[in-house]
Amino acid sequence: MRILTPLEARVLGVLVEKRATVPDTYPLSLNALVAGCNQKTARAPVIEATEAEVLSAVDGLKSLSLAFEGSGARVVRYEHNLGRVLGLPGQSVALLAVLMLRGPQTAAELRLNCERLHRFADISSVEGFLDELAGKDAPLVLRLARAPGARESRWAHLLCGEVADAAPVASGGMGESAVAIGELAALKAEVSRQSDRIERLQATVDRLVAELGLAAD
Image (cartoon, helix red, strand yellow):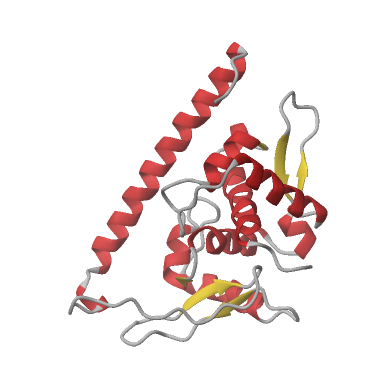
């Protein structure tokens, strides 16, 4: 399989994510797919892709059989085929999706951020699937060198090609250890709850628009 473009990876990650988080509106319409790509939460980096750009990325994924059009819908809708094409279990698909959507993360961060896609029992379970992905003939993930002062190494996906080890983020005199783990977990949990709420509201709006026969913006 060829290397994906960053936008193709974003589109693929969104399709995997939304299948788990908003199953009532999956497969996704182009409007919903663009909105998912341009989300301000749970995305790194945040982007502003146009419909034309997203559609071009979808076409690229379709050429690789990683995405396809759903049948029987009045509006064209799209779904992913990542697990079948790469021969991966759902746990690995979830990890790749979160890496594509949020960038490099530690195993602990991945376990937390994958919660809505797959609930891992513990961090060692996450690491086990990451090791499998890294050990393939064509590795799909890479463990990055640990940044100075960091407690854990981060992982990155390789679907867009090789990645350089990310430079450590400069701190204002406070080390990473100065931030309470509990505060970070609480913040991330709140962000996740708010994201769930927004997605449920969007799903309700989409359903009402379809029932009323209105044109979606």
